[in-house]
Amino acid sequence: MTAFMGRSPQVAARKLAPYRSRRQPDFANGAMASRAVRDRVGSHLDFRPSLGQETAMRHVSELGLFILIGAVLAVLGPYGTVEDPVLPRALFWLGTITAGGVVGILFDMVVQRRLKEPWLRMAVVSVVMTPVVTLIVLQAMNLLLGHDHAVMSPFTRQLLWQVFIVCLIVMGLRTLVQRKPEALVETRTVIAPPLPEAEARLRGRLSARRRTARLIALEADDHYVRVHTDAGIELLTLRFSDAVEELCSAHGYRVHRSWWVAADAIRSARWRRGSGELELEDGSLVPISRSGAPLLRAAGWL
Image (cartoon, rainbow, N blue to C red; front, side, top):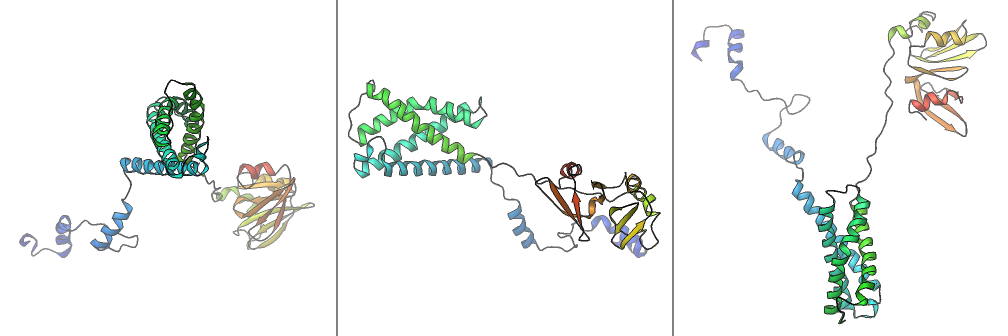
């Protein structure tokens, strides 16, 4: 610090600049946040579930789905199980649906490397998992419901179709639940401000009061043109087609044989049963012809 003594404040400030804190403002207005606030806000902003957490959450939700399906089937008692006692029937359906669902997930993890389309993969997995799940169902029927069925028997072949239908339903519901919602894409028409030279010729015809006003629309009136601006309406002795030609580089649309509107002056548009109208920023209502509708439709107004 003694090396800076005797020098001007400007020189000393430049020498001390590297030693000063380089901390940036925490807010847009330049204010600094306390460390506690920064840590608290940062902890919320930086939180993102890891891949392992997402996988665990998905498996938990799938397990809940299997338990729900098993509980519904236990209440309904399909395939004649309604005649069995309540507790064994509930254990049977909850156990077989959950175990079968786990088997389906394992097969799906193998098949998804080759099949990316979810519904086709679901159908393939349902077919592949059916023999394994059939063995599980057969053992559960013998242990929980008191049946006595051999593995190699006509009953087992009949059971295969029943198990396949249940597997198809369970895996189909799993695929439906896992399906990601379609992304909604919101489109918006952004109108760039017109170039000064795009409206220069027409503005040169206006009076001094409206020459710099905002251009809203042109309206044909016999051999004249009504120029609508935010400073009022002015009548020009000019053919409508010539006026539109002078605005060929401006941002606007000829929506009717008698109307041209500036793009940034449109407030809303309505089209129904072959006809429509525009509402402009000044409250004017402009008709839309069939030939003008495609221009507005391409711009996103219809």
